[in-house]
Length: 223
Image 1 (cartoon, rainbow, N blue to C red):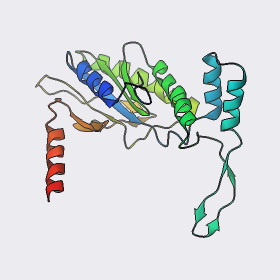
Image 2 (spheres, one colour; image 1 turned 45 degrees about the horizontal axis):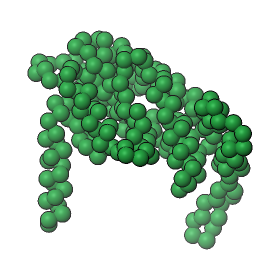
Image 3 (tube, rainbow, N blue to C red; image 1 turned 45 degrees about the vertical axis):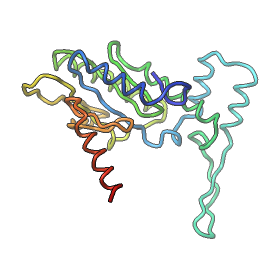
Image 4 (cartoon, rainbow, N blue to C red; image 1 turned 30 degrees about the horizontal axis):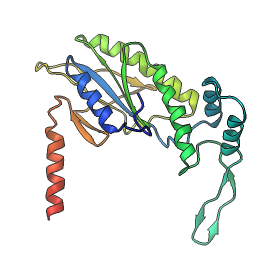
């Protein structure tokens, strides 16, 4: 489901997939974002995933040496802080770091319940479930949310509470109760619209808010 860091793949793949999932029936997707994903990547978890993927020999030893025994300092003006050991995270700016991060984050999709759809672009993650009955949607999504929370706790990641939202996509005109979904014991806010990979999705998928956003942005550029 990953479209980031792959040739001939882009944000368009994820956006079209979400549009296609909406086409047939109502659904509730939840949009996630990981806090400081690169800085909190679990090094031991990367080595475990490499082993589970069947990688043996000198290459895993090279990668382990690449990740371990890294230190850093902070400079403020002419003053330097003490030296600290970097226990978590992958080095920023390295091509190898991109591959290792993708290897680690891609395993998140395996924690989902059967029938729950997902989309992943680097660390921007989305899950959704389609059904005509609200209580069925809530049950399946909540089950997956519990598994996702267990996965991030076990792998050193953390969901951003400010960027994690829920949107109810539905073509029906009659009123619907808002879903009651919890992430780590905290209710996920239900919003009318949200931005996903640069595109604003509203609950009717009319794209009118996105067009208004583009219009305002163009008007500001003209002035």
